[in-house]
Image (cartoon, rainbow, N blue to C red; front, side):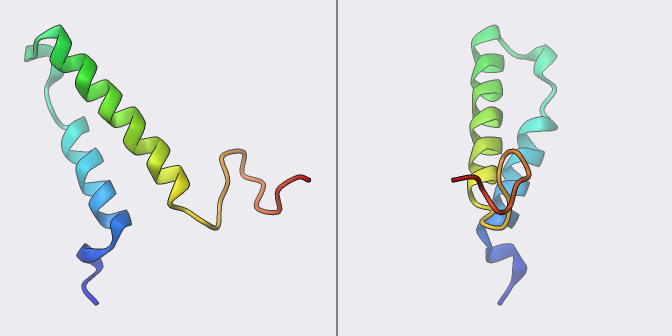
Length: 62
């Protein structure tokens, strides 16, 4: 299977593309959209890693 077909790879590519945009030349509304998209993609990235949690506790607390 091609590693480029995995969701993690695609997520990484999208984040890389968004963070490489020179936001200084954009309108404030577009900057806000990029910031929102970046934040949401980072949150999705945390959710797609089944072996980790947000606080780093792999065992979880009951």
